Length: 112
Length: 112
DNA sequence: CTCTCTTGCTACATTTATCGTAGCAACATG
DNA sequence: CATGTTGCTACGATAAATGTAGCAAGAGAG
Image (cartoon, rainbow over all chains, first blue to last red; front, top):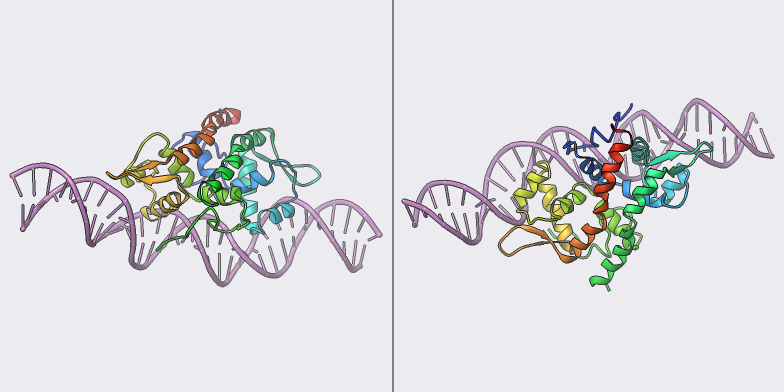
């Protein structure tokens, strides 16, 4: 039940414009994808630990996302078990790490 | 049919951890949210122009996302019509603008 | 006023994605 | 052998997205 051969060319769903930014936006715009990358940002987690970290999300989606992220080359399954970011995945994580700071600023805008 | 009073406190769905980064990740992790922000990054678009830009996504979801993004304070509807980014929204866009560069690098990793 | 075109926005039936529970085989420890 | 991990999957129930159609309000033309 292989999902797709290459998520860099054949985009995740919807917009198949060919532009890599769209494929990336599509991939990240799926539920739990951003969250998974975030939780893996500085730790290697087993599938079950990841599930716990992700608010007990259903393993069905988690596995699906994990497969896509592995295909994309962002996440890998270590030999002794446990998921972790690849160098490329870590690079991607760095890219939207400023989101954390922004989120704090965002709350203070009107949330109290 | 107001969705929620404040997406900074009452998270979009699923994970209600209270941490603003989670609320933000949840909001951005919904279909079309990232895309909408991206398409609005340097242009004010009417709802229909946005729909065209977003690969003819259904107006139902687009309106829903637009409402959420307006509540979040990222997007606003101009007086003469047309959606645009607020200063805060522009700020958020800047945050993941490096994603574009990353996407290009990503493709070149093994895509050809 | 009427006809036309655009704006933002919505209804509703169909399709797709996600949830939640349960369970599998493989491997290890005792 | 039993117990407890690991990654991963099946499947019915529920929530979300799609696609088509259409609404009221406003602007401009005749």
